[in-house]
Amino acid sequence: MYHFTALVTVLALMLYFYMAVRVSQARGKFGVKAPAITGNADFERIFRVQMNTLEWMPIFLPALWLFAIYVSDAIAALIGLVWIVGRAMYMVSYAQAAAKRGPGFGVQALAASALLVGALVAILWRMLHG
View (cartoon, rainbow, N blue to C red):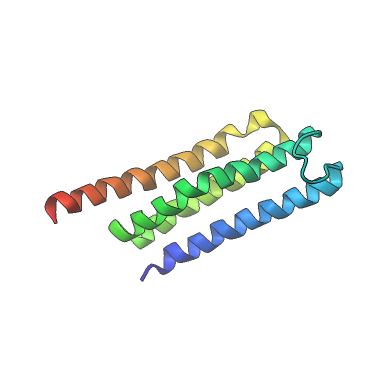
């Protein structure tokens, strides 16, 4: 069973849901009517946080689960929590100013890379030594 990884998956989805709610709220606050996605820099940064997170989900979620299956549920979950913290840092800092987004982006990118590379190495190891 992969209880820890499942829990981290739910937490990541909850964070993404929260980001979607923030975009909706920002539309009202800054007067950006759907389907527009430009027109106010403050709105655009909040929107880009959500979209960038969506762009990373197809990397993060499969890597998280493959790592859990081939390496360790607990370690995958811990690295997944680091990814969530990085995304939260990214969300807060990018909403303030685009120039502040780097540290959060770096944290989540390193976590996703660790999951992806770790899963790849473990899969290849099992193929060669299985």
